[in-house]
Image (cartoon, rainbow, N blue to C red; front, top):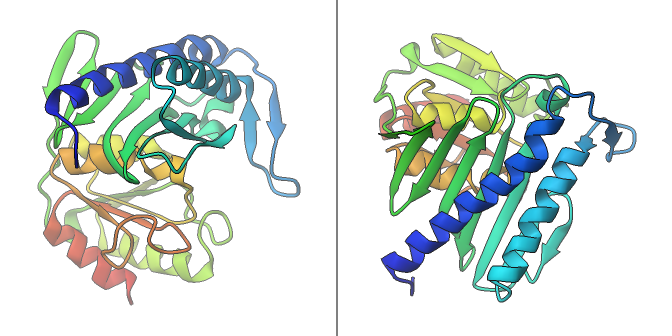
Length: 269
């Protein structure tokens, strides 16, 4: 990869600026009776002004500062996605939580070089929590305090704390995937649901041990990879390949390589 450490630091600072700008749009709308639209037809895929306005200001900032970069965003699609540098934006990951007043939604920002994420930010404005992943490390910021992120170190699946956004068949999982997740959950210590990207951020803090999902989109998973890996975790699809390698966009994030291997064995039946 042909970029310097200084470039990476500059981009990371800019990514934090994107997160700050999104906060200005999202936070005042949270728990404020924001109007909700459905963008999925027969099923329910909510979108709000917080989603749209958060991405709008981010795209304006990128166009002004880095006009040569591409953008992939949840709400307004792709702009010059073939560029070597491209930003991947999801201003409100977990819109269902957002419209229910639950503080597990997050702003996701990733910067990719030649289609691989090199840095990312996961930001939760309401709790004032931010994860910044760059240079192979993940830092957690809350208020003025900075903490280096390290996963739990759990290797035994029987003690694992496990999460997925929705375990039901035909939600994000198909029937076979739901059955595979249920097998893993039966092996673990406990399972918690409906945390979206926030679960991966908590895994980086050592508060979860496994996060398993399918049916994600590029804007859902790009920012997760540097955060998990920078804390010492492992994140792939269910067969150990890079996330996005399969048509179901599966994710398997684990605190350790040993736990990751154990979960893959159970997922495979």
